[in-house]
Image (tube, rainbow, N blue to C red; front, side, top):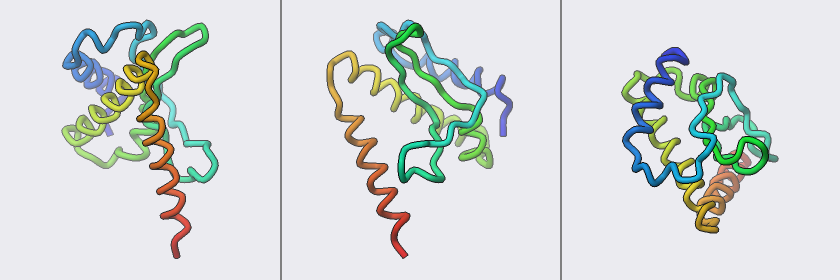
Length: 125
């Protein structure tokens, strides 16, 4: 697994590829958090939160990416594949941000369906 400093460089490089308009009202920016974040939703045992879009409170709007979660889930991958996963996660969180600004909830519904499908899959014998 790459170091957290190496992942920060990678994350910065990826963020620079997004249009500047995506950053509108993202006043807290993109934060790389060191910890792993297990998904605490009911039925989500075994899942980790790779990233999340946060809005409200004193921090405003920001995207958090969890280095520790990436290490647990994708730590075995070579750096180029890890970068692909990181890019996909950042795209996902930017979509949450843009949908939030537009008053849209499509991705939230997709995330809820993903969890429902995961729970159903785990219950199969």
